Length: 98
Image (cartoon, rainbow, N blue to C red; front, top):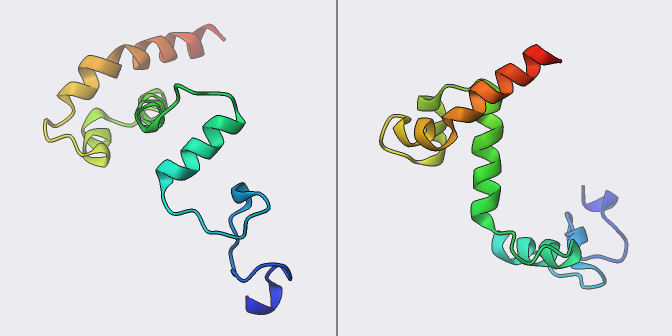
């Protein structure tokens, strides 16, 4: 791997979002901030990523208890059902209509 690295980088896996700097990303928050700025999305944050993940899992048919365990909820999926449960029915209807 060392032989295949970019010749102008000291890192085996240089981080492309750092631009001309050859510095690895220090945190997800830093990478998200850089990406958000480049995409002109000033209000996009970690919680938006989490919300998107949960929404996609619900619409993919993953059961609420499994999603709850993935995201650290201790209620067995009750909150997932309350907040995101409507997505499953809307998604099923949309798929049936197409």
